[in-house]
Image 1 (cartoon, one colour):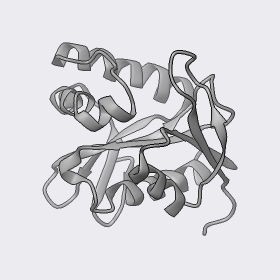
Image 2: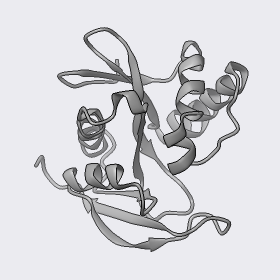
Image 3: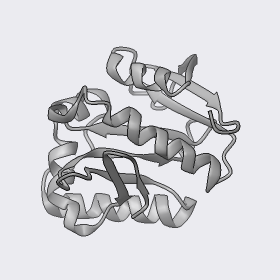
Length: 172
């Protein structure tokens, strides 16, 4: 187990998570706010999981975690750290199935990930990108203490995104 919170378990993705990955990456909110990753089948999802493993955990020592409820093991979303060439800081990222939205899972999981970022990875600053119309994610980022800094272009074919960031000092 990577991380636990009072209600959630966070761990690395595994091949057995392929069906869940398909459902999350084809959900309307994912497609609207994150974008189409071309994952339509469990075979596609296995390739995606392998990419998470090789480009995240193996390369950087961190990545996106599978998030499930501790009470019954139901997968609810993903949350973790990302390093991209198009942004100045390691970022926190999260996505949850809409049927699990509004329950505080994103804030709870992200809080645990920020603690790990500071304590295990020695990060002193964290960023996040978000579409301006993704009000729910912006609320989560603000609850986590991230503040809007500027608009940022991560893909010339897409509209600019809002860039949020904060320093990771001692435990808040």
